[in-house]
Amino acid sequence: MDSFKGQGGVQMLLSAEQEAQQIVASARNLKNSRLKQAREEADREIAQYRASLEAEYQKSVSETSGNSGMNVKRLEEETVEKIKSLKDMSSKVSKDVVAMLMRQVTNVKN
Image 1 (tube, one colour):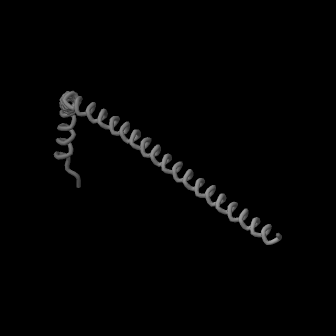
Image 2 (cartoon, helix red, strand yellow; image 1 turned 135 degrees about the horizontal axis):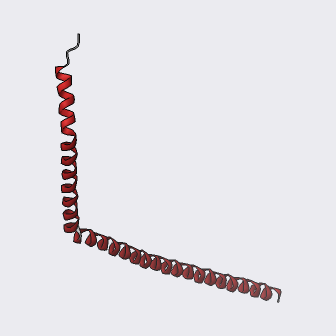
Image 3 (cartoon, helix red, strand yellow; image 1 turned 180 degrees about the vertical axis):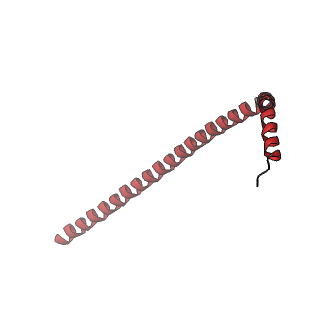
């Protein structure tokens, strides 16, 4: 009768071991499915972020290219103004510069 008890204990241990293996396998499967779900969510977030950055970039490119004609015109106007300003300044000081050059050229030093 003790041998039957011993075999019953072994059977209990074997069934407990199988149950434990099933629990571990279930936990592994759950972990793997959670990891897969996390990867998919991360991939979706990355795709959304990338799309928003791309849209922002395209918007900035379209704004700058759309205004490039206006920028060129504005730069041309500024350039014309600066050239005019430089010509006015040079005409104001040109008499003084010529006089100074003439003094230096005609002044003889020993």
